[in-house]
Every structure is written in structure tokens, then in C-alpha cells.
Length: 320
Image (cartoon, rainbow, N blue to C red; front, side, top):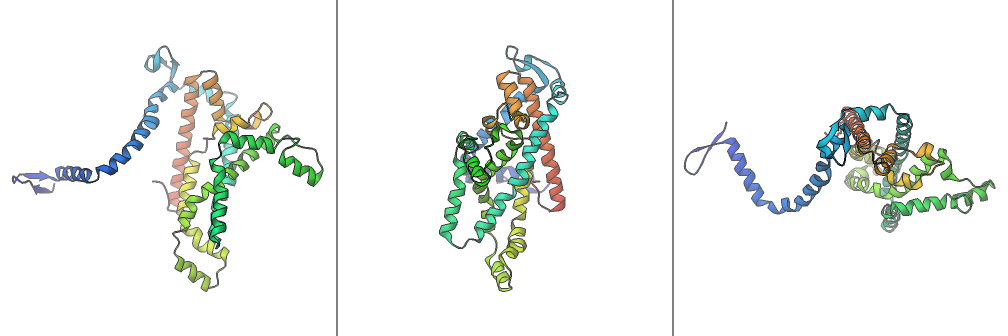
């Protein structure tokens, strides 16, 4: 090991010098670490500490006995879920909504970011941004209330237009299972379209203006500028966002679905998260629902790892 001299002439090992350098660095930038401390505490309390309770997925949990006192049952709850009659319908609905949202919703903010980036009138551009950002800040309860009103059979805005155009009778959209996924996905695109463009607009702002000007001089159209200059520049950002999106493939939020769900559309609206809510909160089957949640997380982790690996091989961009 490399040696240095201490003030008294004694040799110091390289690892000791690194420790001294680390203390010096901490002393110089301690204010930054103090600012970071609340975030670290938050992550420890709300992300890492709850992992202790994940073991009840392998126990027959009893509130009276506690976590450690409850009987160990191994993979019993996992087997019960996988072999149950609801497993495939739940998986089908969850994947159906997730993949539909991914295919229809993921490209939307990218395309809209390109459109905003091409606007030359700054006032119009800022107005469009403000209008499209606003739905993100509306509460989910209010959004679902708007959806119910717009899709109402008698006075809903959609049915009013349909009657004006075709003269057909109104449709109770939320009572028809075949319409539920489309309603969920389209309303989600409307709510998150503007917010999702922020990161892509930030990436597009880094495109070299000289390259763009050179392409204009060479006769490139707007579409060609987007395809051959802007798109390749932000492609790593798109890939990273796609990997993160795929990592939550089975994590369909339960709040919006529960607010739009009813007995008539249950066939296509019942997903893993709503099933966990019913059994865990309403029926107090804590061990079983924890096992389902853990199963969900494991599948998401596998999908994330596979997509990240394929992305690294095919495009050279990956999370790790």
C-alpha cells in the first residue's frame, strides 16, 4: 500500500489517508449533508423500515401474537393466490390497463413536447404549457367526478355530442366493461400530458442551435429536424423513462379505479391493487394481501431488470 508521512514521521496507510480526506470533505460540505438529512430520514422511515413487516407474507399473522410470534407458513399465501380462480382475470386486467397506458400514454408527452418546442411564439407556448399542466394538479376525486359527469347517459357531454352527430341513444359508458380501459387511459393522458412534457422539453433545450440552423440552411423540414436531430438527442432520456415506466407495469393505482369502479364494470376494472384493498382493508387478510403485494413487487423488479438489460444491449442507455 502507498504510504505517507504523519507529522511525527510515522507512516500512514493509504486507507487511513482516505479516511482523513473523507473527514476533511465532510467538514467542508457539512451544510449540504444537513440539507440532505431530511430526505435520507424520510426514505429510511417510509421505504426501508416497512420492509421489516414484509415477512408477514410468510406467516399467519395475528395482531395478538405480533409479527415474530405469528406462525411461519412459508409460501402458503403465494400458492393460494397463484392457484386461486381470480389470479388470471386480475393479471389480465392489470396487464391490459398497464400495457394500454404504456402504448397510448407514453408517446403522447414526447410528441407534445416536440410540438411545443417547434412553437416560435413564446406567449402561445407558455399559454399551452399552463393549460396542459393544470389537470395534473386537480385531485383524483375531482377528476373522477368530471369523468362521471361527462359520461352520464342523459346529460353527459360525450353523449350530447353523440346524439347531435348520430341521433343514437345515450350510452352508460361506466356500466359497460368494454369502455372502462379506454376511459381510464384517455383520462390519464389528459391529466398527465402537460406534466409529462417537462422533462422532454428540458432535454430538448440542450440541442445545439447551430446544428439546427445548419440543417435549416441545408433545406431540412421541421419533421426532418425532429427525426434526425431532436429525437436522437433526447433518445437516452426517452429510454430511461421507458425503463422506469416498465418497472411499474403491475402497479396500477387503485385510487382512480376504485372511484370509477362499480358492479357492472367489475369484469374489466378489477385489478390486483383493488383486490388487495378489498381483502386487506375490508377483510383484514393481512398476510395474504402482503404476499400479493410482495409478488407484485418481485414481478416488477424482474421486468425492470430485463428491460434495463435489453435497453443497454440495444441502445446503450440503461439505469445500471
